[in-house]
Image (cartoon, rainbow, N blue to C red):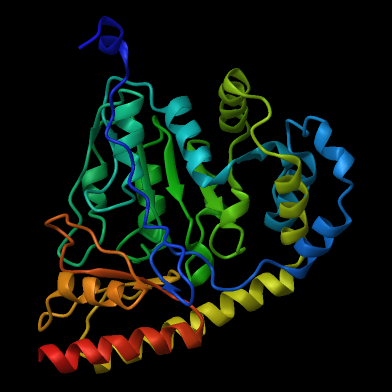
Length: 354
């Protein structure tokens, strides 16, 4: 080993879902929206003056923040924006989780949390979910350096009742509690109304799912003004120009189009409920999803073999090797036509293996 290699920060990185690029594939593995963004986004992109690209973007992303504030009914200085919710969450870890006490997040959850904790040298503990994949709220009554969990959870798809969320926030007012709501628009109940009541609460959302803009990388947090100022202080200490001009203007237009947003969410929810019934008919079981995906298992099938079979047919779903969830597939909700293709090959596999 060379001397300089001793000083390299060594981490185990987050492993994103596979990003295949095949003709006629059915991609149901990364929870992307199957529908395009609002037509308003296309319009503003076509009308954009390319000369704007030679200038630095607004460091505060003011047009986007203004639209978000109006949509969610909060003041503009209660909003932080970042390059996808991953950027927002990483910034929040760096800003708020600086205690010697461990940060708490569930043992089955978004797998980026331990990566950030290791990267920033943050101690953490992972309380177990119960046998039905629910949080055990009493496990969060202990001393801690902060708390974070998704609601609905990923990859389990389960939504905790808002009373559970509030109970955890109320019991931990000496630390920051972050609720990661990437999937809340698909039938969940947001914790945003609690922000005015609890100054230690930060709610994070994204444009990647319900607003069909994963490629634009837009995320945001809403919380107490002091929390948002602290996050901006850290952000501006690293890079003042994190969000590009195109994302700012396109994101603002997406928020303006409320009817399109509602329509897309409604279509995905409708397809999800149909998919639940089709899975049940084939012997699958799953938590009651309030997301744009279903976390499904079938005790009569080898799930790993099913995953590989679907992959061989260019139908991509998500599977983990983790012992806790190796018998589950996470299936993103696509269009009705994409789900028909999925079930065509599921049925072929069942016929060959049962």
